[in-house]
Length: 163
Length: 163
DNA sequence: CAGCAATAGTTTCTGCTTGCAACTTACCTG
DNA sequence: CAGGTAAGTTGCAAGCAGAAACTATTGCTG
Image (cartoon, rainbow over all chains, first blue to last red; front, side, top):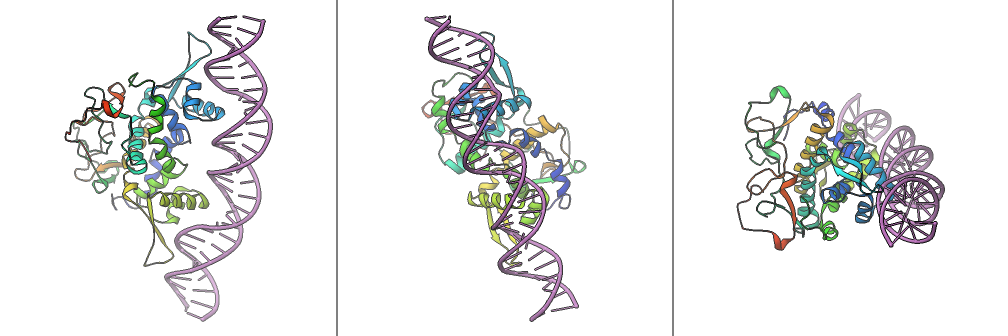
């Protein structure tokens, strides 16, 4: 990933959408609330007691996640005190990010295989580590990656490995 | 990803290493500093002018990333004013997380293909989207995933897709 | 060797964010 | 209608983020 496009680092950074992603998800509790959603939490009080987060902060974060279209806020018809928060497609799309972060924490921070594990529903085998891959599925490491400007990209319409 | 292990959600959350990962990387500038490192920045002044971060915050974040073994701090032998910050293996291991987050931002926030793109050095084709995969490489979506306790995991020693 | 510039911070002060605890408002249940 | 639950809001104290100025080494130049 060395010195390919070296002097255009400035524009490189400007065009990167990492800051945009972080604006949506970079705040202190956002990822834990998201994890809660993935784990089946739907209501304010559930998040509150599960995460131990302050109520005002939780209200603020939920509102922001709704504002960013990561969650939808829906009053429950059968009990009109209750509000349901559910993941949107945009929220679900954060799954690879969240799993990657969790796997990293497992490998390098807690250093334990983690008791309840995500498994493939089909065969109950644990999921694979999340990796950066080439179009053909080869795992790419640090040395295999280069930044390229659009005109330098070899963009043969080939079968994509995913999506 | 529905109602499999439903009542053990509490312990489930406790054993999750996402909080641990967020303790290391969850602060405001950490991911952007990491991106800088991946992009070839090595010195204090480079990070400072590139990111526009306040100097005291940068000093604090660099120290913390070094403390967490994500970066190494090394005085330059040839110019003893300079200090080099370089990624450790642990830092490099955040690549999938960072790419996943960036791709999410690209797809759902900025909604543009992003000008300089990460390509496979071998064939200069853009990398594939980061996904959650089964051991055999099948892409797993929300419906395909289940939380399982270790005893319920079918753990046939099979070829891993990666790592 | 004197003086200036570069590098990597530290300090100080100000303002926003976080967090706790108590309060509120709407709704349901007996 | 009394009491409890759900989803917030408000007020206040502490801590963290940010801008600007300052410092301490080290290197460069004449």
